[in-house]
Image 1 (spheres, rainbow, N blue to C red):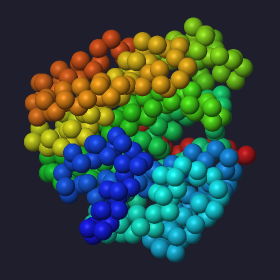
Image 2: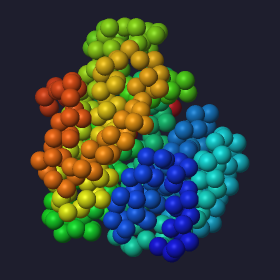
Image 3: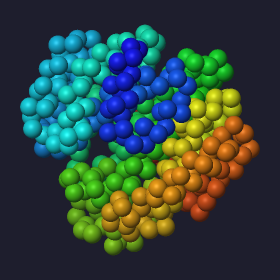
Image 4: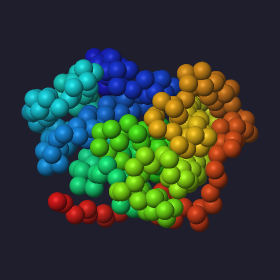
Length: 357
């Protein structure tokens, strides 16, 4: 990638993700441009999904323009111009990112072909999947656990697969373990996404969206389509604890994934272990306060984040120590057997075709 493209990406990244602005620089230098580009492209797609006042049909058009822009500079400019003209992108940093879409897509074209292929597949899965889920969105949650699993795949599991493909191209041992790590990467993505869904459930509610699976709460006597003040219902709090246990299960598989990265690849292990540690700490806050009513109540502190990073850095090149750090991070979290997880078992999405209304 050209120096000016790298400089642009490095300027844009901290404005849209402080977390990735910390973790991506830990990676080997050969991976940083591609993974920064991937994050920016996914974040551009997110600006479309986050525009709650936009009609699903209009979102689909924007997604298709973004995908076409991978190969066509004129379409890339049309995507940016028309999305900004909608007036629905308000945040100044997001508007800047959207305005720079043609430059981000030009940087994509400067990547090696193998890296382009991994990013292209991920973005196609994400954009097409998010377009489908526009017809399933509701303030009252998703219909079923399988819908939640599918949503986690199209916004996070496919990112795990993409990262694994990029990692495998840089190290022969990861390449040899690629199939196993691809499977684990889907669980990794689901664990992180479920943590985000649980943390942000009340912020999402204010925007008229909920990603919780209704069947989990119906089984505990809570109808999300009728009940008010969900957090006051014992069945709701029990459902939250159950979903914490499911996310915990998937993050244990994420730990297995991390330990399959050679210990010599300190940067890749840091990239993974920091994310896992932050997610586990967030889950512990949620499990301790299942009746929380805002994301601020369960958000981890900066002090805790610094402690997670320091502990991971000390242990990252030693499997035994890293397992110990992971055990510390899981302390007092609800534990579920695989048999208890049912339709929330992580898996690549196959052929879901939501009804369009």
